[in-house]
Length: 406
Image 1 (cartoon, rainbow, N blue to C red):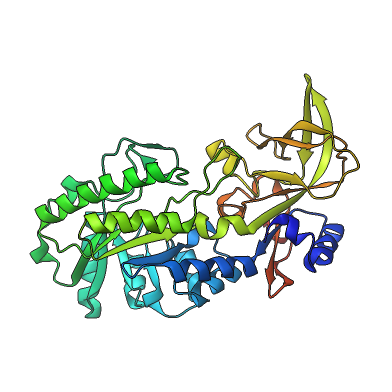
Image 2: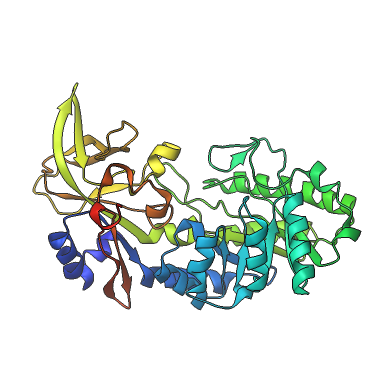
């Protein structure tokens, strides 16, 4: 459901009621539209492709419940994410575990919980999985996360940079598999890119990675059952970014599958699944002109949506209400934190916007609140709402600093 539709159907009154009553910023997630996308995606999926939802994109229960109801598993990358997902399902086979920092104790907990597959990111982790399995008299399926040398720059997941994700091929080549009798290696995991906006670029990254991993499997004498290509499917944050359909992604994978004899590919989709169905609302608290530039200061900023500070790329922004003028002005929008980093972007907005009016940032269903710095300066924690069965329900109330400070 687009933001225009949210304000034109029966939820219109409910959303406006929230705006009128709210003193603080809030998120709104359109779970009804998310469920439709999940149905469309799973119906289109070929048999050789398994999908996982990357919990890190947005771990709110309303989204996790929708994913669990579909034929999509969930990827967790921390103890907290695991505990959150286990509120929605106790079926460990629907969960895989990624993330570079897995302690021996955490690994033992994963095995005890019956997690379907663990992505092993170091030689230490491999030994700990084997030791825990011996003690628990279990056998564990794993993927070896491999850090490849790629000609690609990515500020968040590394690209060609040295990162903590996985071992490089030379590290895995030191393995003596006879020492790991309680482990079943299913294949490899590789993921060094994020929010790729070009299908051509995605194709190049996938093909290059697959070819390197096929060669590594031969050197290690590993039967290659699965290659997990991670996520990285992009969604547009500006008008000049390419938007591609899931059908185009499947066509690309079909082409790759016809060339490489890999039984199963996995994708971990977070942003691509949840991103389009989230909205962040915040109020304008000041308006001024600095050296000829029009500025709006909003109550919420990177304490709730920090992506612009991390990536230099803004969430799209619109005014909530209809204005009498059709004249637009370019505004620089800044949040309320005492740092110049709290800059949300530059947008064409109605020139007569006033203090007390609200802005809405779209594409905010992924990497929003839990990706931010909510405690800095003791501002309110944002409330969260979901549209489910065409009704709005509150998932979390606004929390003021005196509710969490000690």
